[in-house]
Length: 229
Image 1: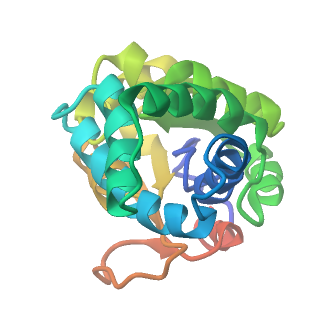
Image 2: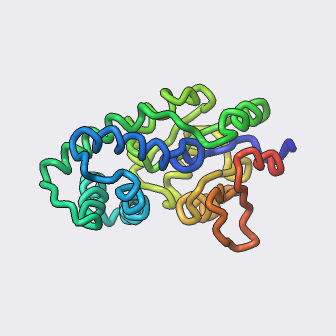
């Protein structure tokens, strides 16, 4: 459904187009199998996912640095497993993880089809809080880089979502206006409320099907965007 009001569509990357959890598990599996083979990867991931999310929440509000984020999410996970590990080993895993992670290229089901569909009628863009060099590798390695006219990351904007400044930076870079733009992402605070506060429309990518306010536009599958755009 072509939306005549909307000209520019902004996407979050991780957990929205790029399947972070699946790719992350593959990266950790490759690392731990070699260096810490007694760690059960499934148990590790069960702890890591909520811990990583909590650390990113602190990071997006500038309560920890990206260096602290990379350390804390691993340290807290190993602590939860009661697995003794040195800080040097954690640093080694953190560095190897960042290197290996973008080599895995699983996207959410329907990602390529919806990007093909939307690119016929809209300018597509990325707004991400992720680390710039890593996010660029993800986009290129998963072969979706060329769909996007602009890529805004928190490093270039100087702030992170949900801060309205990153949205204004993205709009300026895209040479568009908030009332002609829509944001799609998996985080209610950073992607939905942040976009709404900046004057954009927003759609919540609710892959986990959590209960949300009925006034929030949402989809459970990327192809459901055809109902709105």
